[in-house]
Length: 402
View 1 (cartoon, helix red, strand yellow):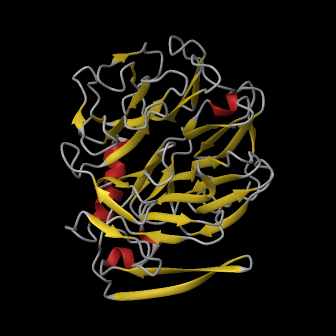
View 2 (cartoon, helix red, strand yellow; view 1 turned 135 degrees about the vertical axis):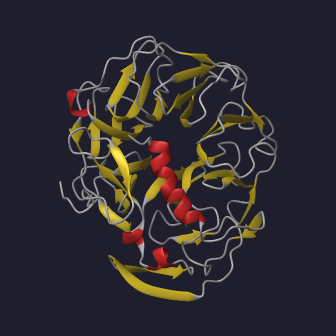
């Protein structure tokens, strides 16, 4: 059985064929080359809570940083180089301290705001660091999850690591969430074994409610106003708990794609929620009771709101970075690095209520000319809910309605 990292690398390889070399920095243009951006797959996005203009984007070609609100992006250099970065986390108590996980080179850390990166200590043996989370209540405390189901804890922002007990199954960890109201409450999502919750800092790990004991959990998001309200994005839809995880109910009416890979809640209005799926970006204004599509036909692997301006959103997709400055009404492509103009362009208008969104300029790669349907998509194994990559076609659950 092939591992998730090897299968997902197929997608990265296809996307990185578009161009083998590029300058390290480029300027974002609204009329730029479309979705096919030099950075490739954007796996994670982090906004510096102390600076409205500093963001980080993890991609299949390394880590990019902007200090001007996304107008220009620079690829970080040094030890991290152009490694495929899977996860990134920033310490809110000390935003200059960051950690980044890669798919083959282990974990890297920075203490100067991302300018210089060094490899983590040998105390973290995992080479594929699939998930990272910083404890918002304990400065310097970081959790790291591996593809093999190992969970590690650091008390010094990644300088040294200790492995927690091993009641978790030997299956890839997909996400880690630390409860902001209780430092001993941890949520861990897995690829195939559902959701686990520890209330004692990781000593014991009972499974969550029976609705989430199987399948893949991509993300766990806590309501910033009411932390007992918990959302879990899975391969089989969005689930919501209002009792701290004791029970979960489906909350995806209106989501045409049930593969929910990313979620973001407006900190100024918790009833406004954005969902990134395998089939587009959606928005709810009634606390997940109903959903409306903002942008179809894009695979969204990361979604983040600017904490300084919640109407500004960034979406990481399989084809690069998108930005909206009007709460998702209009989206523009954000080049992470320069790219030669495409030799052929195709455009189409997509209805978005009373708005339209035009895409896309295609590079001269035959498999990409066929559009998103030719891109590898996650396919769910019906018996177990394990997500694997398929070399063509669409996720069979994308068209299923709740």
